[in-house]
Length: 289
Length: 167
Ligand code: FES
Ligand code: FES
Image (cartoon, rainbow over all chains, first blue to last red; front, side, top):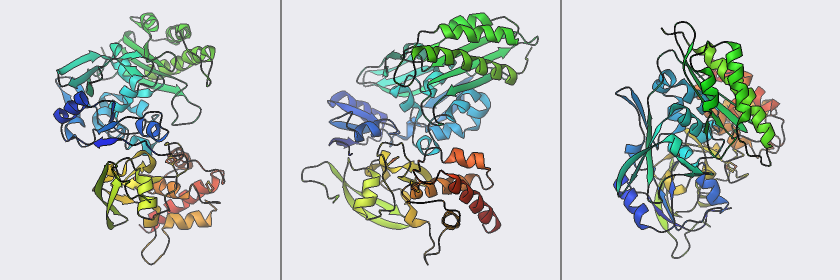
């Protein structure tokens, strides 16, 4: 198996990259290569041009500014895994990252690549959905941001134009003391999840839920924010019964079946895993008046 | 074998592999794995699946493990690569991890072994005193058809002990 012939471009700046993307026909962007390279090797994709983003240094960074965390699209998954900022301020992302592939793939794989590949069961899009991240996009026409809720257009397809490049994402981290958990079921560690759940809980001084987020993956075409479950949690005491009711509601999600798991089984997993994620998030949260 | 076909998109690159510098001209679509094996004759790096699943092709790129079937050779231009051929000392003395694989039957056919060794070299660098569960997790992305993994885990734990005793 070998990649088909293509012309290779390795621009040194974003300006050059967007200019190439705007002018070349049938071009593919190469980020960490952990999804595109297998597809090239198997010739599932046959681009005439490959635009390698790896030389653009300005796209790899993890920054905290004005109560926001900004992450460049070309930031390696492993650099996020080992980032103190991410570990302290966004434990959800770290727990998810440890379930993304293996060390060898995280060393190369990028967060922007995961978002754009948009596998329905991929961990990082679920995290971005739970965090309500903004996705930053650039083209020769300028830059824009779109909320993660609008990012998936349909199956494995982000809602960006053919001449646009995802340059990064930004989000407001949850407050100090919040509880986070990422739980998934996969056939083998490192595989894409069959179903995964991201949960975030913020508790007040009395142990009531000030704010909750539940994102489900592996059920629909992209990550699903489960607002029905969030509404059952909002303002309630974080008891086992409350969490169980919210988790059970996840069984109502519209799921697609495939060769790996039926729709019924995916709904079942969504309920079970949401229960685990919510209990872990609650147990990790501190009550903050 | 890897000489670019006439008219093909090609580039001249420099790789430092196991401390030795190589200047080669490669087609831009050539994977790093094929460049090492066919271009440089370093056939220790094995190709099992060629789509990132089996881990046999794992090499270190600037000290970090990577699947060489999922990188283009041009992307490694200027990088320092370590392959299984670079693990033994220059007098041929095997690396302590290789010795432990030998002692604990960490291999049968040996197909997965280069990827296992390279993966575990990086792992032991970060975790000099791992437990068995951590070793299993570390090789979660490396498939072995023969051993059942037990010998590999035992070898890794033994190598870690030896390497801590004589760093
Ligand atoms: S040959 Fe590269 S992972 Fe299998
Ligand atoms: S020793 Fe044969 S594949 Fe592992």
